[in-house]
Length: 255
Image (cartoon, rainbow, N blue to C red; front, side):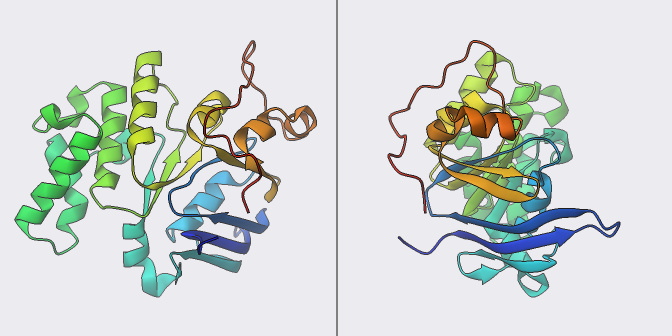
């Protein structure tokens, strides 16, 4: 198999207060994959994500993006390659108009004005928000703001898109619309979520992080139908939901 676009090896991390959050995590994601990162609260998911673009630095082990190690000297390029869409879109939207928010990142890449315009238009088109370019973000619905937040990251043309609880607080129609957008994106996706049906719908592969360790890695369907694994690591499907294999379900676990 090709070299992973995201290569996490033996990653361990303890916070300054001594709390050990990660214990030798290995996670390898290949170009074009959509992988769900599952796990109970306190499992270390956020700590892991914060290592992917250098917000936190590894206490032990390494993180590489397309062969480039995540360390201080490489942070500018790493943060272009790894785009994180946070759970609350208001953490990423601060400009007077949608267009200005989406243009903010590309303007810091030494691109020409014309190149910035192309990126902005492409990103807004990908998320179906082109007609709202001149609107103030705070005049949009929550679902629309989440799509604009996604566009701000897509405009940077990342190699890896990290989605933090993308379906949270969305009504059913917005949830479906966002799923349709994610499916169409030509980018590697790591989706951190407690929404297990959404993980099954969008991500053929899943990894379970529990107690700071990867305890399972394989097809999302096989993980969600493993009753012992689910119970042990406090993962529960919604009442009445029965996991069904999807057309893209792998027949063997990812390596």
